[in-house]
Image 1 (cartoon, one colour):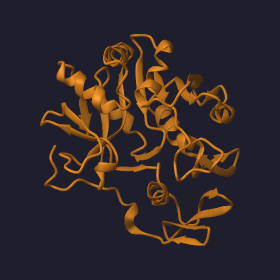
Image 2 (cartoon, rainbow, N blue to C red; image 1 turned 90 degrees about the vertical axis):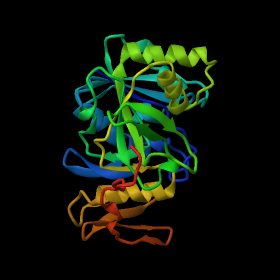
Image 3 (cartoon, one colour; image 1 turned 135 degrees about the vertical axis):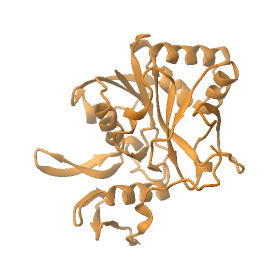
Length: 288
């Protein structure tokens, strides 16, 4: 079983200037009994491992070796591979860079490495051999890709950033077979590779009779491409840690948990403990 982690660039306002966004420290981990900062992309890697991935391919930007240096050749039970995206030409291009490694019969997880989401075992809710998206309820779907489904969970449309969205559910990862990944790649090439994001490509796939499912198994989601998203990710992690445990150190500033909520001191700024860490749920008026 494969996991594909597409390239994460360096255009985020939340990352240290000299590192890939996927290595931004968010939360912590134990390394031989010592607590150390945890890279953002590690959360996705560990979720893939939990779902049974035995091979993981990172797609990295040309000229960038920090992800390779950080992860090396193995992680848990998985062997790690790396594919290079020569130019930052979009998510679709990045995902399909890993396709030569994947056999048609393989099962594949694809995730967003710049997000934090729960539950940690959410990938296990995805259908075995159907193209299926793991969905999460959010308050601001306009900053991500909202997924519209029918009453049976079939994806009708993925809507990009726009004001009038028909769903408050966004996708954080998806699962498919290697054969289905090849089919999507063939469609992308037939469309002159113009699709940078999954949404337009998937919409064309559905319009041509393809079937994709949306699985509403997610409970909490944060997109860490902005400082607000980073703060939300810290809150989500803080709500799941014991009081007093450190979260991470960013630019020399400690992030800690106070009374079950995170407290951050950076550049003189104080992020107050907040109840915002509770999972976000769609309202009753949300469209499916």
